[in-house]
Image (cartoon, rainbow, N blue to C red; front, side):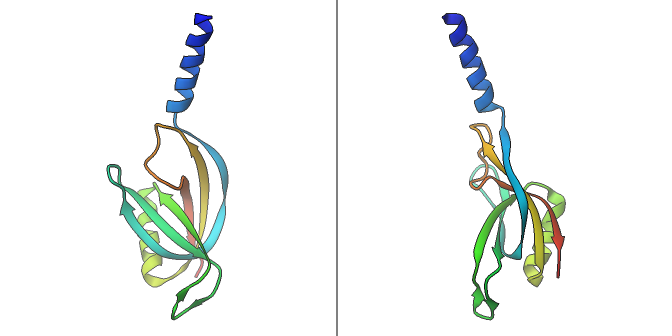
Length: 117
C-alpha cells in the first residue's frame, strides 16, 4: 500500500510541476488594439486583437482575442502593426498549464504572425 502511495505521489508531483500541454491551435485575423509588457513578478508581452466586426473612426467592434508573445523577434512586428493599424494573421496555440507555469492569465501563445495589409 505504501509503495502505491509513493508511486502515486511521485506521478502526481511530476504532472503538476512538469509544465504544460498544448490543448488547441489555430489562426486568427484582425487588428492589434493593445500590446504591453505586463505582470507583477514575471513580465510577459500581452496583446489584444480585434477580430472582424465594424471598424470606423469611433473605434473597433468585434470579438477580442487575448494572447501572450514569448518570441522576442515578433515584438517589433506587432508593435509596428499596432502603430500603423495593419491587419495581422496570428497563428497560436493554447496550453493547459500546471502549477509551475503561471506567468500568464489566458494561456494563449503566439507562434507566428503575418502582416496581411
